[in-house]
Image 1 (spheres, rainbow, N blue to C red):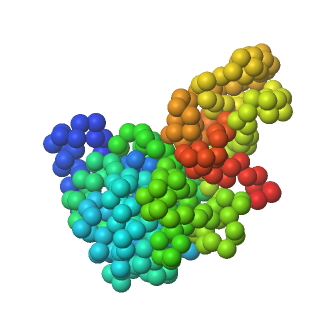
Image 2: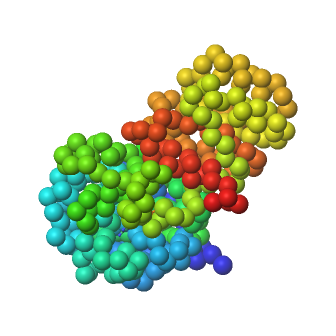
Image 3: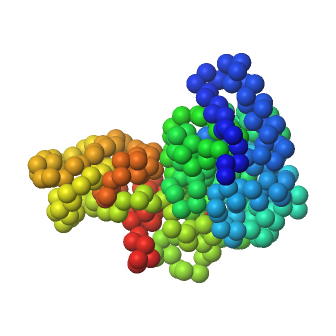
Length: 358
Ligand code: TXA
Ligand code: MG
C-alpha cells in the first residue's frame, strides 16, 4: 500500500523560481508537522524528519526499514542552533565545525534532553552535522527545527547520490523529494566521536584523519580499519552490510602488476558486466580491456577522473545503474588507501563482502 498518492519532486534548477520557493515552503511545513522530506546534501541525499518529534523519528526507521539500534544524525543550518541539540559543546567541536562546516563532518556530542532518545537509539550522545547544499540550508531555515536524516535509501541499498535514486526507493512513501542534482562528494560524511577524551573516527569520509589532526593538534584514532586496536567503539551503522549492488563486486587492484587475475575473471563472464575504472589507463590496461571486449563479455565501462575523489563521487551511482542494467558482476578499481582514498576503499570493501562469507 502506498502511503501517498503522489510524491512531489521539487526540481530546483532555478532556485529563484517562485514555484520552487512555494514548494520549499510547503515541504518545510510538512517537515515541521512530522512528515518526511528527502533533500540533497554535498555527501548523499538525506531522508529528513523533525528531530523534536518522536513519532516523526519513528517514521524514518519504518520507511527505511532501518534497524532500531542504528542512531540518526541531526542536521542544522545555523551554528547558533547547536546548543538546542547538544550539551557541553567543547572547544574541539567548535574548532572543527568552524573549520569544516558546512561540510561533510559529523560530530558525536552529548545529547540535549529535548532530542528524543530514539534519535540516538537510546544513547546519551547525539551526532550532528551542517550540510552544505544551499537548497537544504534554505529548507532547514524555513522549517526552523533540527532535522534527523539518514541516507534516503531503503536499508541495505547504497546511499542515493542522485534524485532518481531517491525516487526509486521512496516514491509514494514520502510527500516530497527535493532534486538538487548530483551530490558532489558522493560518500557519507566522516563521523567523529568527541564524546570521550580521544577523538575517534567511527566512519571515514571526505574530512580525513590527517585534516582533523592538523586542526586539533592531537592524534585521532580510528575504529574502522583492520589494524585499529579493536577496543574503540564503532559506529553502530558500520556493522551492517551496506552499499551493495545486486551484482557480485570484484575489486581491481591499484597496481597494474597485480591485476592479471581479475582481468581473467572478467573475461570468463558471458553476460553483462560493469567496469568502473580510472581514466588514466596504462598501455597494459588498455590492451587487457581490448582483450575482454573481444571475448563475449558485454562490458559497460565508466571512466572516472581525478582519482579517489572522482571515484567517490561516481561509485554509488554506478552501482545503481548496474542494478538497472541487471549486470551480473561489476569490477571496480581500487584507489590508494590514504587521504580521500580511505573512505572510498572502506565503502568499496564493504560492497565486495560476499554475503556467504561476512
Ligand atoms: O553524509 C551523511 O552523513 C548522510 C547525509 C544525509 O547527511 N547521512 C547519513 O546517515 O549517512 P546514516 O543514518 O545513513 O548514517 C549515520 C551514521 C551511522 O553509521 C550511525 O551508526 C552513526 O552515523 N551515528 C549516528 N548517531 C550516532 C551516535 N550518537 N553515536 C555513534 N554513531 C552514530
Ligand atoms: Mg545510510
